[in-house]
Image 1: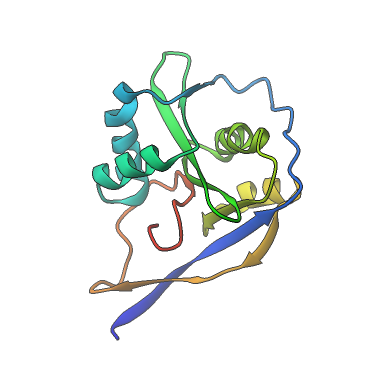
Image 2: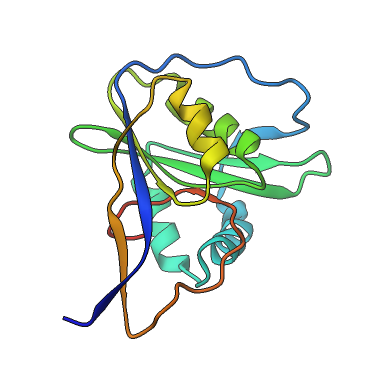
Length: 170
């Protein structure tokens, strides 16, 4: 059919998550996303995935149970995260952050009050983040391939994507 294997995604599930006390040295603030945050979120997403997905991100925010942004001490948005309530799991993603510590802080806030199963799909290359999840009762259940068509490589990315929206969407 013309699809080419290019990478993998790591699927993690958790049925017993307890919020973690986070490192107080992180100089960030996590807030509920506001309508005026959308342009900065779309820009972060474009850098993280390599293409602009304004319509997709807008629709995903409308579907979200919770939409968060991370701000640095200057008030600039440096990351974001969404949670989508599905029929079986609360799906965590996309999660975009400057490092795995901030990504875990987002996950902790998105998952902290949820009673039930969690799922996150993580792009390859996020070993420190995945190790942190495994210490907090997440279990890697599969590693499906990423297939693309009409190209040999994924678009250039900033390596700041810690949770994808869903396997089908990236």
